[in-house]
Length: 215
Image (cartoon, rainbow, N blue to C red; front, side, top):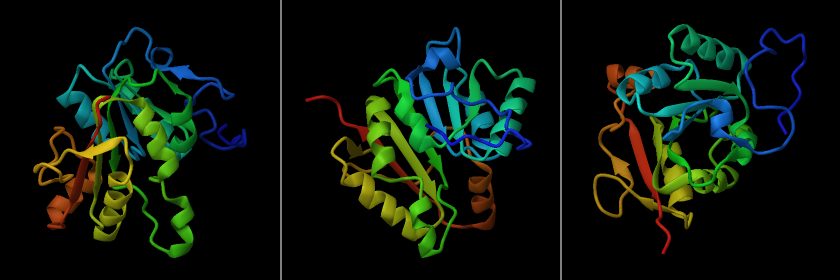
């Protein structure tokens, strides 16, 4: 269960999953939509979500943002832009929220754009992408659904690659067979961090994995 937020918090009213631990189906969050569903973990200021909505209007996109301020700001911007039927941002810890989302094998893609902005060793316990998260990503992805990760930090890219490649539910789906690396972002949408990295000429490490189809 997500931690209880102080009601005096200026963004305590941000949209969240219903209280408790009961499963929540995507149509409860997006009434009248049937998918395909996609999830962005940590959308921040929402740049990727807005561009993704424009690039793929058939998609229904859920953002899970642990910072209540940005969850609320971006969700309100989506509403004002007439996009709330297609895209929402909930204030939630993805590690907890993913456990509640249903149905299984219903999500076409999961995106992590430049996650884990903490560099000191003592912050490693705060890293988003880990075994716990991968278990629920694998459960939610459709057979052959994609997990797409981007970072401009080589050490983090190596860490993510080792972690996901070792998981039996995933197989590489990059530019070359057996390799998860992509040269370009194929989703028609970029996060603000990706735009900045490109403008600054920084290398971007792009990893894509596919959920293995049942044997």
